[in-house]
Amino acid sequence: MCCFTAGVDRQERRIFMNGGMMDLHRLIARAGLRPPRVVTIVVTKGCNLSCVHCWTESPAHGTVPPVPVDTLKRVIRAFSLLPGVEEIWLTGGEPLTHPDWFELLSFTCRRSGLKGVRLQTNATLLTGAHVEALASMECRGLTVQVSLEGATARTNDRVRGEGSFERVLQALKLLARAGMGPQVVVEFTEMEHNFGELPDLLFLLKGLRIERLVSGTLVQGGRAAGTPQVAPPRPTQYVEILDLYCSDPRFRSLYQRLGNIAAIEWFRGKAFPASRVCTCVERPYINGDGKIYPCLMLPVDGLAVPGVHHRPLEEVLMEALPIWAELPRLSRRRSLELKACRDCPGRRHCAGGCMGRTYAATGDFMNVEDRCELRRAVYTWEAPQKSGPATPRQLTESGGQR
Image: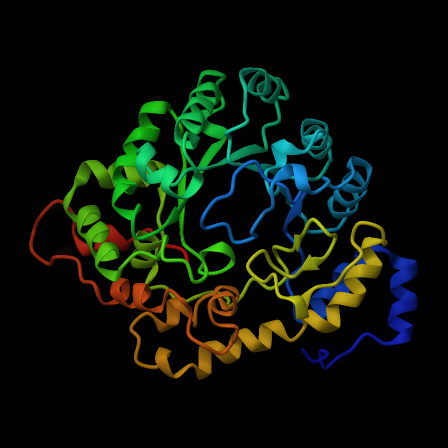
């Protein structure tokens, strides 16, 4: 990666050291980057599960030490003071294997200026006592993100391990009974073997009084790379869920209340051009070794800067700026130069897709995104023109996400 054109000269460095966080915010903008908004911090690399599709390939929690609590508090405090940061997400591994996870969560929730705090968990370790403690925090900005990969034990446990579905279901019930249903979001990884259960999962969550489901397509990296056990959804499966969304008012109504599924959001948004290409540096990711990456989707060695755990945040970000400043230009190049995109009807909405996913799947930023065929299936699908449960305009009028 080359340095950004404007550079950060010695005089600017001196000004920054005197001006602190506000000058850092200005220098990030000058580099052509969007300043951090949502920060994801790994509190431990260890996990109690060994999921087949784990992108980070998390080791067993007893084999690696968690990040020390005082170290994590220092990092959390530093990011919460950075202008523009709105949310901090605590993740793993499995964060509940950290002996001080609740202390860390409480500390983060008390940081003034944050609009949101998220705990990303597989929920298999959540107990009634844990949920009671979470509910007692009365943290309005707290979200508990729970991973679930199917509406049945057979489908979920195929990738997350035997018995995990029942444990997650019990945790969701405990959270709902404690009145935390509106603060829970279920995260679903779309795969060929489980995609057909998405509608059933929406109705299951409705019955549990859980109010949000977000799905994302399998990333073919980490443990998912090269294994025959998991595969991304087929384009025909995306078409089938669009057919269902169009033809079934009951499903459509529930989806609009609870759901965020890639295929449907792409369809609803295909008429709207992307307002930006890449969210470069808006969502930085700090791994369990204290390396910072510009985005959760870009854990690439060449983009990493070490030392977040023991160095001043300002110093680390100043080192990162020349490395990361090429990313917006690279993202724009993808949107303009990828040959496969030129005749795609969704080109203006997709803008080349996520370059992080591209790199994870192919090792080359200038390849097409791994979801290219799925996107084309969505962008070329046409809602029925005849009178029926919903018109094409009604299906797309609220826009959608990239």
